[in-house]
Amino acid sequence: MPELPEVETTVRGLRPVLEGQQLASVEPRRLDLRFPFPPDLRQRLTGARVTGLGRRAKYGLIDTDRGDTMIFHLGMSGRWRVDPEGIGTHDHLVLETGAGRWLSLNDPRRFGFVELVTTEALPAYPPFAAMGPEPLGPEFNAAYLSAALAGRSAPIKALLLDQRIVAGLGNIYVCEALHMAGISPTRAGGRIGAKRLEGLVAAIKDVLVWAIEAGGSTIRDYARPDGELGYFARQWRVYGREGEPCSCGRPVRRRTEGGRSTFYCAACQR
Ligand SMILES: [Zn+2]
Image 1 (cartoon, rainbow, N blue to C red):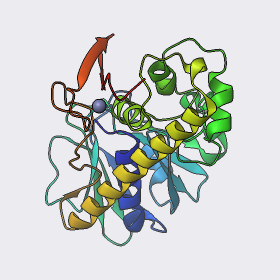
Image 2: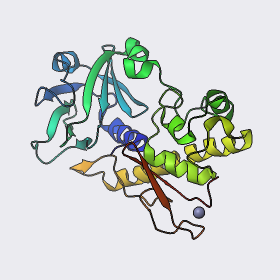
Image 3: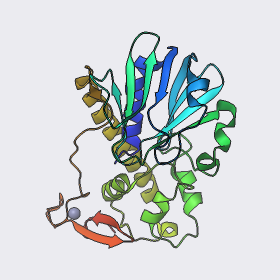
Image 4: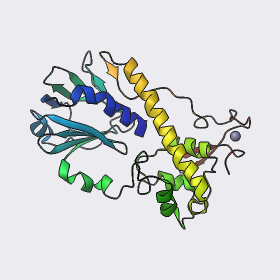
């Protein structure tokens, strides 16, 4: 499932193909994904020039010179294909640039979606309106996190997954960062000292940067026709490794609440 690093590597992979380019054609190939395609998508984007690409949490952003931003979410299985050799049943939105490059948004499970908002109205787009800071941005630091967690008795893991506290962190990265920082996923958020919060913030940034860099190198490998952007293989410290040895030698444990698994080491994380 695409998480923040996959969305970031996708945006970085799309940038050289799209930035500064006019959109020669914009073709939705069905009416909806998770939500309907905006009915005026083709009309508003065809002929527009892409002025920039960005990311907010797990949402990709494509700005145009007409003052619109196309928002894309990759859902469970979405990916952009660059210059695909053919268009198949799972290619749901196809773009052609003025330079003759092709992009297709491929999503077999169709949990992704595309929205179109004016760039000016982007901060008020409902998922963004109450969203906390980007984890890689300067506003996400130990002082901020300490204030956000003050008095909170909920487990730190649940609080880090709360998009109002920090944007775009998913289960994998929260498990990994808590292990790196040596903090138990069940510890009350408000009961973690300043020094340990500093370590936690550094661990969150490190694990994301590492994943983005790993994805970036994959994109270079895939910089060829039919390349699929944004996915890469990884070796996790605890995630998905129940029963395998932690770096300390003890087995990684798993607990499940509400259908979501937490992987951790009871010896290394307190
Ligand atoms: Zn351990």
